[in-house]
Image: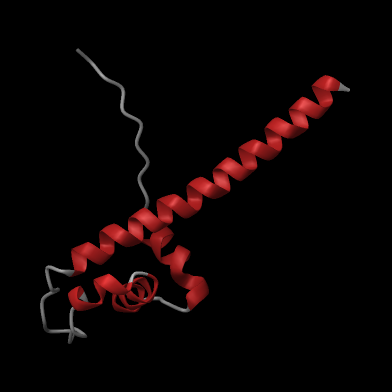
Length: 95
């Protein structure tokens, strides 16, 4: 049985753009911003990484949350645009 699953991919720059308004440009700054929004994640926030250090495995938590927030944000924008189009279509159809 085949099932069709819709999916959407986001590039790293798209995710970074979502956090640019708050001034976060690096993964660490984005992670800190996420902990401000979700304080329960604060204990999972890795220490600041030096360039020669490997990335902490816990950073993947913040990658996932950042991706989810990006999806949520962009989905709202798309839905608002679609709703505006639908209302314009409806107004033109009814008139």
